[in-house]
Length: 193
Image (cartoon, rainbow, N blue to C red; front, side):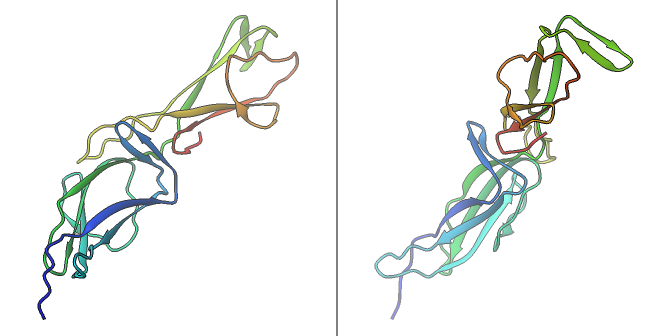
């Protein structure tokens, strides 16, 4: 009996664990996101030779055989991937852009007027606005990959006097007395400042 298999396998990139965020420039993932390739050799007319191997390359580099989950270093990754079946049918190369963001955003505070600093302590009036702003830094440029922005800012959070962190919406004012102000930003893949 001779079985004819002329159909190439189909491979899908699967992201597990970690956090993801889809943007126009690609899929952002956290540094803990696991990547793997799931490949199947479709059965056509009751015939499928089975997947022989799956391979991928990162930013145009050499192909590597993939057999388990893996993580990527921070930066932009243009992944090309394909599978071949036991009959020698090679899938057309597929591609995905994966942007690994492991750097938290940075928050700054702008203290309005009136205010004065004496011996390192900042004194403000009850009406003095305290404004927070944050930005998510660009991803580090890999030697073989393009530059890319970070995943973007999800939110800024603020805590006053050790209270629960809550979403920052607008400039704050503080009551009279000694106040401890804590703030942080979170990006779209969950990196917390």
